Length: 242
Image (cartoon, rainbow, N blue to C red; front, side, top):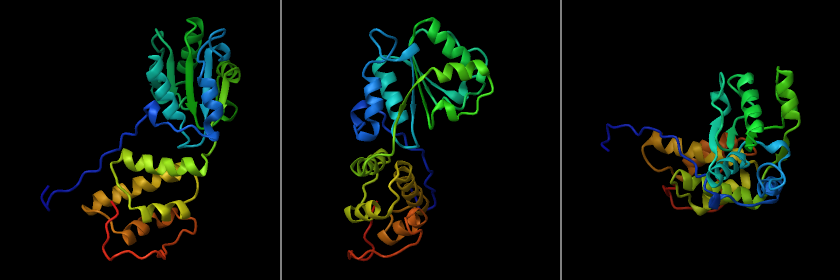
């Protein structure tokens, strides 16, 4: 790349491989439900449906993709559901289930899966009781759906998520910066993902690797105190972090 060429930001593709998912107390309930998917007696899901609910970054989409891959199910997104979806021939995994393109399409999909006795796994940030649903029949189906709650991860898992997001974006973070982020970033899964994304975008925009002061400046709005401060651990001037 010449100096006159601009680095074009590319959306990182996260890994949803089952091997990359880290079990934790925060996702223990979901893993129990997913250990026996589908209709009774072989499966544990009432009516063959399960919703994974949890805040952003807690792993619900990862689990949904990994389960669909392992079971050979069809992957769908809620916003893409319109009209009358094709009758399913296998299990369905539906992400962003709380945001259907049309409520009638989601209702049709749920009914079609039930009639064919095919499992339906869904993911959304919160349980259906908190969704804004106009169709009474859809509210009734959702109310009868089992919900597995995912909570904010433990400290150990948050550190693992920070490393995973960096690996997904092919970023190698300096150990000293990692220690700073673990100490000063709010302990929420979504913040870990956003911090790495900001570092990645800033590095691409600058066309070079970021120094430690530059990285801290980029992340200052995310820090617990919302301000940029220097670390007590000395580093040589100009040390690159990414």
